[in-house]
Length: 356
Image (cartoon, rainbow, N blue to C red):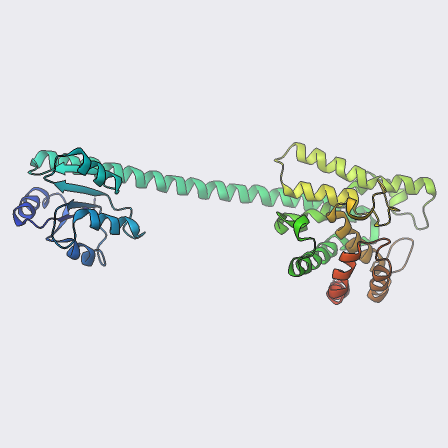
């Protein structure tokens, strides 16, 4: 076992000599006549314990420990005061400055050794506990990260199932997430809806968008992939994918810990078909009564629907999607968000052309 290192600082040569005779066989020992030499030594050696005299010329022990405790490199080194003082006020002052113990001079060899042994044991146990806690934290973080990855993958699979059932929507979910990221970044840059977005965590927000159509899992294939226009009755069934999506996410959330991911996911799912002029569904909300997540997803979702082929229509060019959204400002879409969109529509087009 490696010997512990101890530094004794005392301006009295007799005390240094006595300390050396008691400690040299058990510890790597440095005996120093002043605090000045202590700080020179600390540039190269970090001891396991410092025995520090209080009454010294130039810099006393109180001044020295203040410097030690103010420096992160030395703050954790245990310090025991050596002193001829016996008053409670002096002892209290030393302990309040961070000393771990007080040894009165002249000291008895056996007492000195036992006090040092006890304090080194305490310090060793503290380090072991800190190491254990760090190791435990790392394991918990690794396990949490694994659970989060597994959780996210399951949700990815669910969203992919929607795409597989929704026939030729292709990479709709992937693209809409990218559109949203562009819109949100631009909003942050311009301070648009800053108060509403306060506290949003984009790391939860953007992935949550993949569940916006999760309710389509509960819609019949004959309706979901009908090659022509839906009848009024069929359209009423299709509209239910919004509220069904919220119900599905609620059921997932009941068996997991609540977090911002599901909060955003439910708003994306439930409100992305609402329209600014209250002509949307399922609730017929208008203006800013529509949650911001729904107003954002409305732009991303409609843009991608226009540029993508469907059983009932051909894909249209990005210019047509851009023109539709700009023209529907204040009717279908939030005017402020359309203004944001107008500044990033070229980025939308790049994603549309690269990911079809």
